[in-house]
Amino acid sequence: MRPFGERWRAPYACNPWASRGRLYPEAVSPTRSDFQRDRDRIIHSSAFRRLKHKTQVFVYHEGDHFRTRLTHTIEVSQIARALARSLGLDEDLAEALALSHDLGHTPFGHTGEDTLEECMAAFGGFDHNAQALRVVTRLERRYPDYDGLNLTWETLEGLVKHNGPLLEADGKPTLRYAARGVPLAITEYNVIQDLELATFASGEAQAAAIADDIAYDAHDIDDGLRAGLFRIDDLREVPLLNAILSEIDDRWPNLDLSRRIHELTRRVITRFVEDVVAEGDKRIAALNPQSAKDIRKAGETVICFSDGMREADAAIKRFLYARMYRHAEVMRVRAQADDVLRDLFRRFKAEPELMPEEWQADLPRDDEPRLARRVADYIAGMTDRYAILEHRRLFDVTPDLR
Image (cartoon, rainbow, N blue to C red; front, side):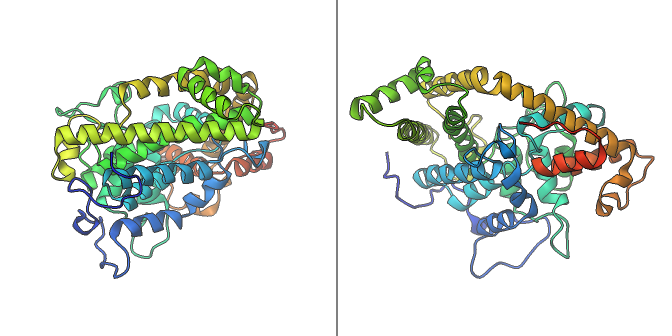
């Protein structure tokens, strides 16, 4: 295994100086690569700033110590850069993809996505990856010459395909999209700029995707413990966590709870990162890719967990699903959040003039699918607290969500 601090770019990395370019051509920057410019545009976007007040599991006023979409995104970015650096991938592209991966998320975590998916079922559905593509290609309006951020092909491709191909070689949707089809926002954009939906994404996108999994596991454990949804010794039912806790207790038998929790999450991240680097090195050596295209054409994910660590990841997620995501208190707040967003969707769809003026522009009232999509775009962009404030403005009774 190579030293983790070594910085280099392998032949199979995406090369910013050989990017496939942007939909709208721009002059080359004398001080930044194209992927660095993508990263900077994402950071300066309105959608990125709003992540500060969008939550993972808890609503915004549960406490300052719990993660928001923004803190989660920063943590994913750090892990993605570490993986990219060790595996010879382009760090800036991996970082840009990590920073943008949650731009399409709704208020109130996954509850909001589930709610909008049901509200939009008759109008093409709702998918947070597709929504992220809408954000960076249409909904951000900052530049005089185009809508969106005009990101490079490599960043858009990774944003859409970081979880794998969307189409089979014969053009049929992959298993993930077999029932509902590929989201309309993605298929519509793909006509304008072919993102090669039947291939895997770059190594950088794969690194960002696995970094997201690692961050979720470690930091949802942390948040769940600090929220009192389960106790630290409950985690011993997960073999990997039991082994790590035993290591910590053997070395520091009287460690206080706060430090014990931090040491646990720190070691979980380290174990996962070291495993991904080792497995990635192994798969890259077997594939012997000479270009980024070889990674895309590999037919399988190259940057991933080993079989043993994949089971550990699944075991942690099973634990969190039962003890955190489906905890009675979390489910109670989720139900309230669902009510808030359903109310907002129905009201804005029936009376679009209640939306801000800029959201009413060029909106034909007799085009129901387009109207529904505009309402979904507006709601998806809300922060948790703005959604609550809008509900209070329009309805007599608003749940406390606490």
